[in-house]
Length: 89
Image (cartoon, rainbow, N blue to C red; front, side, top):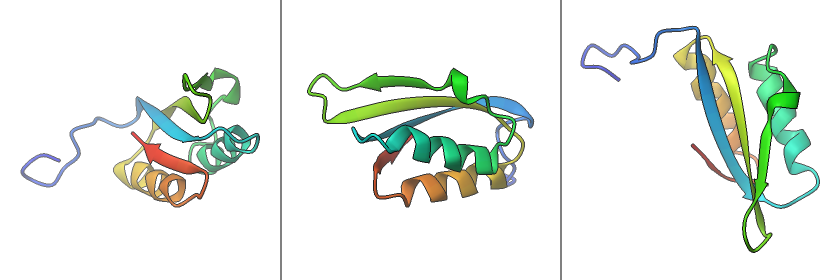
């Protein structure tokens, strides 16, 4: 945030979200469902997935077109509140 409380981003803008969670069959679909609720124009085919070296965790990268700070805040809240998700960057 800048000193006047405004966002440092100019919206709309591409915004990469990195979501890390337990390697569970439901993780990618759950993340996709949440992201699409907040960014309906997101193309799920562009989601990148990478497993950790030990195979216990998976990271997903979703680059959305962010339209507002409120959209990002709500998206972060919903993702971080999900039991399969460990970290959202």
